[in-house]
Length: 222
Image (cartoon, rainbow, N blue to C red; front, side, top):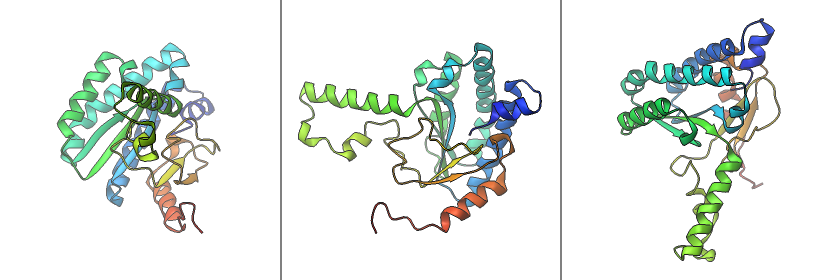
């Protein structure tokens, strides 16, 4: 969900206002995905690199996240949506971790859609952590090196119980992945949208899905 900061700068607004406007896009896209019957929606909400931003911006982002969780908790349950979070969750403020844990527990049996928030997330760190845990298991003798397969490796990622994405949408026209789900998007279709995230709306999502539906996925085959 790229472009919040530049969207605000173009309008002479603080970056926090861009993030606030982006939160409205999140609400609209969530509802649109529910309407389309999407089973999993993963939002790259806060990267591990974002911790390097100014403290005031980080505080504003955490406040927005807390407000989003407070506002959406009842709605998620009412819409039968399950909430999950991936990333270095332990780095988040205690109040945010408590909110996440409470809502995840409350919605764990919901099954119409799963909303996955990538928070304090970085794919290189995820892959490194998975390799470390597998190496530790091999040293302990609970895993033989011969047993290490792509399936076993995937089971040690944050997304162990989440299917790989079919479609990755990148806003603001940037042509890069930005350390997002590097393992999981090996065969994902990618749609680049020039609009910045605060301007992304239901129609843009529908257009991206239509583009995806018109493609032929080969998964490396002819």
